[in-house]
Length: 510
Image (cartoon, rainbow, N blue to C red; front, side, top):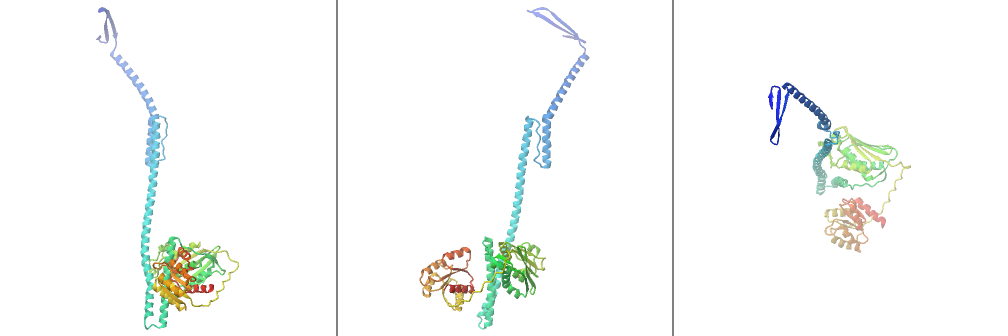
């Protein structure tokens, strides 16, 4: 090849069997500028076609790849900003990008569920934390009330004990005349009644907490209940020189209620009104019938109730905080007991007060029975039975109790023999031939239940009336004494009037 200017000459020999047959001679004229122009045209054409192909490919990628990815990115940004895991990316293809969109949406659903679970758990944890905080606060309050209750209990029990000790000292004095002795006896009787009331309140509280507090409902008149409550509260009212006004409806109001329990509620409210009022104040009790309900309102001019105490006045062991209230306070169970008793009668009780020093009011609402056409005739009083002396066997391991009760019975003219255990009781029974046997159930070695069977087996005591004496008075205790052969079950302390009633019933049967 030979280049000469713009002329290109190409020589190529033709050989066959190692013999040169000739030479091919080619010559062409080709300008450099023309060649460059041709090359540029070719290059431009290639670039143009490449750009067109790239444009087509980019459009296809935008529709199939970039668009879905951008959509996923936008959804992800919104989820981050709005914390809304219900958002979803839209699937537009059925290829791998579509699979990616589905996977992203599934991931969002899973994350949303996890977030919801965590939020629910957090709310439950917050609620549990709040409940524990409230429980801890309640425990602290309960512990404080327990301490206050125990302190008050000790104070309330010491209050009647002190005058009783003093009264006994007066009775022991050598120069004590009959008037001083009677006054000492009156003091002991009043203070003993106060102690019995405190113990009864505690027993009722235990029945409330165990759910065993019951009422025995029967038709009765509201006036009779109110009169019984007023009679019970009269000593406190008179002692503090209060005046009491009672206003009841003109027509009889009949209730289906437990007269003892309902009287207990009203006497408790009257006692509180008397105790928490300065001497010489006025107390009123009013009853009004409203349809099928009767509202009994007790107003006083006492020390009132603070708003923070008013909210919890019916809670167990709740007491006033002021010194004047504490000096007169009881065990803090009376209003809680009253509330429970009223609820057992299907009624409500509410407290009202304008504040400390402005008095207080208690409103009891009870359902009334359908009005009766005529007032029921009062039962005729039973005729007095002729009294006579009985042979009585008294068995109790408490020497003081047995001795004091024996003295009371002997003062009524009865022949009384005392025993302190089962062996003594059997020996005395064979000699005394008792007509009535009062047996303590908690005797040493041999219980009163077992002793009852032994006495029934003795010919000298087989026909005697068996009466149980015990500090236990629950329904199961009474049931057990009946099964053991006792005809009656008396709960200590026992009053002489109850024993006289038993003996009067014995007269009727003989």
